[in-house]
Length: 249
Image 1 (cartoon, rainbow, N blue to C red):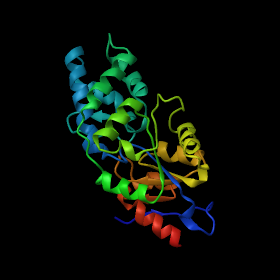
Image 2 (cartoon, rainbow, N blue to C red):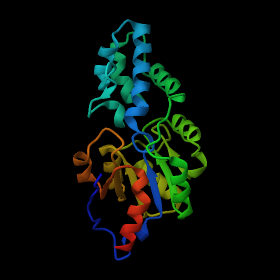
Image 3 (cartoon, rainbow, N blue to C red):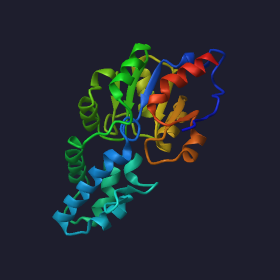
Image 4 (cartoon, helix red, strand yellow):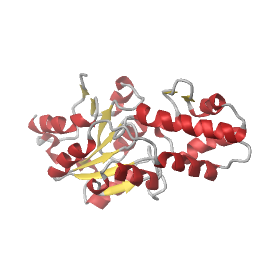
């Protein structure tokens, strides 16, 4: 797949040599969104339908997911919003369920979701760490779920920083968690690139003063992401070669 690239006007003559840290989104970036989270959403909705008697199709419509086909709408809340925001759209259809109970249910079902890696992750992150890069995870999922997913993938030790929506730094598209990563890593924002599959990720990165790398392992298409990205890559496996090419330019 051809990549779409736009030269970052903020960089100087050293090209991408100034990048010392990478902040990754999780779902749709580390893990293929459709193949990982389609099964999760279907299971959650079927469970809630069984508890409430509300058809899963009606519940799915509230969050932009079709449980019959496993397809997400391009503007589905599940793509980039936090669990409480998703729960807030489901709760009106579920008498007797409050937002906190729904978020707990989401986490329960997420704990054992089969994760489909966008690319083989351990070799990639071994290579990124070997470059001396600081690595962070900034997700709108809960910190507990994110930590469990990194551990399941064998990646927990590869990350210097983890922030979820509940970590106290705010949530994307707010730049707060990205700035928290940069501060924790001892880096200036311009030394960090944000890597994500949604506009929320890239808007947050731009607001933080970081470079932005879009990947196409989520729901959004290249044309939607390109205006907010310095480069659009097919997946995170293309990052090392792109960094090398930009540093040599």
